[in-house]
Picture (cartoon, rainbow, N blue to C red):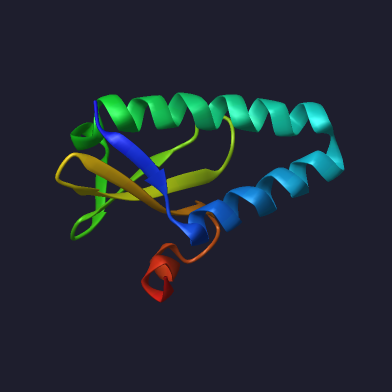
Length: 96
């Protein structure tokens, strides 16, 4: 299993998403976190099965929410670089 880290911009993305869903309904934020945990588990255990989006950038989309987790694989580490809503420009990770 790979070590997985969230880069600071991805941590900021996650914080903003949680705050947004928490403002609507705290249970919704909990469901989002459950879906995120499932996706992170999949990424850690099967990273090469995830869709290659841009050269070395891979993405996995959450099942019940329109978010993608963008990550790169370096040796035995996976770095999450962004968590973006599917309506946003996916190339935003280039600014990070």
